[in-house]
Amino acid sequence: MLFDLDGTLIDSARDLARAANAMRTARGLPPLPHGQYRPHGGSGARGMLGQAFAVAPGHADYEELKREFLDRYEGLMYDSTQPFAGIVAELAGLTAAGLVWGIVTNKAERFALPLTAALRLGASTVIGGDTTGHAKPHPAPLLEAARRLGVPPQACLYVGDDERDVIAGRAAGMATAVAAWGYLGPQADHRQWGADIELISPGELLKVLGLA
Image 1 (cartoon, rainbow, N blue to C red):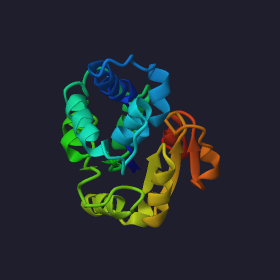
Image 2: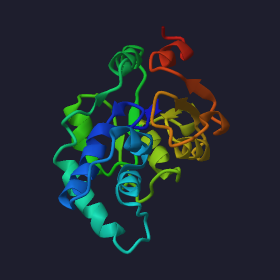
Image 3: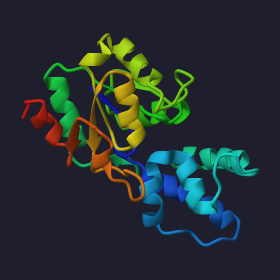
């Protein structure tokens, strides 16, 4: 079992939004509502800066703004981020059944490793967006996770809340599932992504696997 992190296992959107709003406040701009940021939570700095300042990669100011955003986020990423309801029980069920599981996220190791440790998620491996030199939708991070777990890619199920998770999983030869409780993206229709399984709530995974 492999999982995306933000929007799949943990709800981090509020802390991401707070970092972006802190940047707006520092520039004399009013904060934006949390609900405006939330659908973009899975896109990290790119999503938050796109909402806060209408900038994207390639914009002259983007890299400087990204560095500031990441520094601000690092200082508050533990404040309100928690696993989604039902996730802790789900992961415990997987472990009790003898299944190994890991995390594959586009979050840089700088954030992913200490955050997953602080939340005591108990993953057997954590692959960040900079672990392999490639980020999803490239399959390399997923293949590295399977290698570390000692499991063939074909024996893995990857669960995520973004279309790139499905693309990466399929490219790696894995089965895929959509976490429909996640951020999904603005106006996204996750049923068109071609995933093998749709999960409406975390507890459904154990049922799909015949463990509950």
